[in-house]
Structures are given as structure tokens and as C-alpha cells.
Image (cartoon, rainbow, N blue to C red; front, side):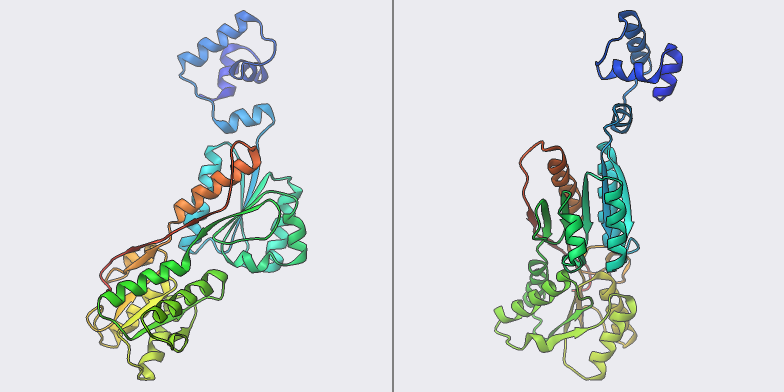
Length: 329
């Protein structure tokens, strides 16, 4: 039963039911009792959305992500949308493809709708949002960047320590006796660069000064992982472990290794990053880094809600990922 059914059964207007539920306005005592009895009899619990609509105070947020097809972005954006919806917010979900003009288009549309806040999902926005036009848009409304940082007023961050995450993978492999490690750098975002830096600096901690020579550039896909491994094998570079910046790339690396007749992890160990579905469907199952997208999403919602409603203190925060050991190491 919804608010319209309650109004119909009570023989009153929807606005009267709203005033009774919100204990506001002048309502005849007999009418109030009648509505309250119907609400109680039907165990009616008004949703936050319904309350917002009736009081004309429904808040709106826009969530901009890079590519909703990518499991990591999808999981983060989905959790953000669901949690904001649960809190009674109207959510616009925008898929920018990581393109500057698409980002400008969606931000302009969001501001025309007078959204109360914006969440940006993906470190690519670190670079895109340096555009003067975008900066001018973001100065006018509260913004939270999931896994990134903006030097703008009213902008806050929920960061994942990607350097630390890759360091966990390197430490794990080193503890298992691996010394010939290669890193597959499959993107060129701020997050990807931090991961690569984490790999190089981790090797340096173990006395290896030529870490940059152990970085192979590829693309984030099954094919990207396969081609990088084929390149390694063709060059006859000695290697016993491969660290990847994405699970999908790691799955491709595993596939290429098996096709080449190498055993995983007996001959070559592989680690991924994101703890995504790719890690679980890979055979053998990937050892990966959990960068906790659901936690990032929930903290992003909590932070933006606090900014919008000014209900509590708010500040940026950083999350430390964890290693999830599978069967590839």
C-alpha cells in the first residue's frame, strides 16, 4: 500500500496524509485519528523518497563514472546509487567514458538540474577536472571524488592507497622466494601511475634498483595481458612472477602462460588488483588486491551527505587495501 492508497481509503487528499505523517499543519483531530488508524492497520512505513516528494525537499545527486561495464566501476557506482536512493535522494548515473567533452556535458546537465552534490568515480577525473571549464562547474557544488583528489573548494576525497596495495603484492611474492618480477602497467590514470610507482619502490626496498626496466606497458584487457606475456616470453626475459594493475589483465596473463605450457604458480606466479569477478572466474583463481569498492562507495555517500546536509564533521579519508590470496601464487 502506498500513500495514494492511504489517501483514498481515508477519503482525504495526499497532502493531508503527508501532514499527518510529518506531524505538520492543521488537520482536523478526527481526520488525523482516522488517517493514523489506517496507517497503523496497514503497518505503513513511508519511504524517504515519498517523504521528500511530499515535502518537495527531495535532494538530487549526480554520479559520474568512467565505464559502467568495468566491474570495479560498476560495483562502486551501484553501491553509491543504492545507498543514496535508500536515503531518499534522486540519483542521476552518468557514464562519461573518461572523455573530457562527455564529462563537461554531464556536469552541465547536472548543474542545470540543480543537483545538491556530485560524486566522481575514478582517478581519471584527477586529470580531467583540471580543465578550466570543469573547475568552474565544480566550484559551485559539493563534490566527492572516489579514489582521487581535487584541489577545489567543497571537494573531498575517499582515497585508496594503491601504492600500498601493489606493495602488498610484491611483499607476498618476495616472501615466496620470487626475485624476477615484472609489472604490467595497463592504464595511464593517476591510480595506475601510483600502482606502478608502488611496484618500483617496493623492488627498491629489496635492493633492486632497476625496477623501471621491469615495467611493461599494455592495455587493461584479456588481450592486453596475453600480449604482454607473449612479449616477455619472446624477449626471453627471465621472470618468475607477474604483478598486474587490474584483474582482467592478470587473467589474460594467466591464459597466455598456460597456452605457452608454463604452470601457474609453479613456474610463474601472477597477482591481480581489484578483487573482481575476473579474479574468481580465472582458473586457477587469482591472488589479488581487494581495494574495497563497497567501502569506498559507502564512505563517499556518507561524506557527500554530510556536506549537503551539514549534519556532522566531514573530511577526506584514505583506505588501505588488503591482499586476497588465491591459487596463482
